[in-house]
Image (cartoon, rainbow, N blue to C red):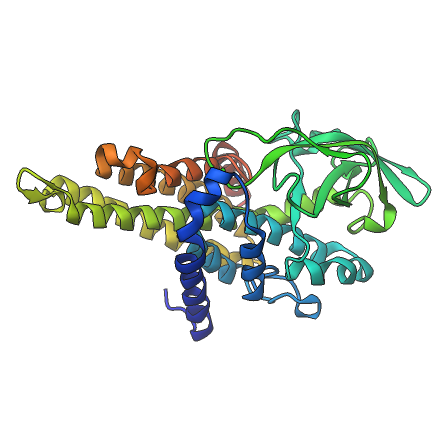
Length: 377
């Protein structure tokens, strides 16, 4: 696929940042289990804090295809920071797309500069794939809502400055869900102990709890009762972003495996000279190129508002994340015992990419969506 001159520059900029500002620090960030705020602010200086947010509030007004290019390249340096940036961008987009002009202007300039960093709160301990069954309540009390409940698996918990939460404002099923912006430091907002995770260890992840947490009604995004619709509207793009992050991580794993196969010698020869290694690398390259083609096609369909965009986004998320995990695992196998060591950086990629088959709808749910969309044609 031929990129425009602007898109080529975007790719080069993101790739250079990944090589110079992310990759050298990724092991340190994982060991410290923390995101680096200065790095996120530097990404915002490149226009990556509001990739598809309107320009009047500091956004870059780029396309979903442009975003896929950016997240793919950034993940070559550090999957954890790139994936967190994609979450922040989803929140910024949701506010830009659905909030009143007053709310947009109050929050987005600081979000696009990443002076304010955002987390997204949808999943609950009892509401995962069945997101419409969420129970966190928000009862109106004058010019405030009073929140009670908990959100689970929240990336950036106790790190982010705001938490955009899907909450129940009535018992009317999916139509009873609204969206509120909760500032860190609000009385009644608290965080559980950091989860001990397989991957994405640089991202603090924890339960976010609301105990009689009073949030101004002015912090509502859009109409009361429309929150679930907003959440669903963000999923197609979120799935592309997660797929792009997986693709970038797998591409780096492939490149590491190829370089290692050139250097590693057994039986008097580089292991790259053995046909078994050549065939494995050839399959890995082929599978990643196929995944990339599907991802790019899905992104372009979403930009074009094609009637089959949802189906293609689900297909891309399923295929790209499954393929990326397999390629990363094959890259570890090529490294042999050394791939199992942290020093080579392969095992971290394998651990990081596993969750991409679960996030933004499990890959089993993706199959449900794809089959449902097929029945409509």
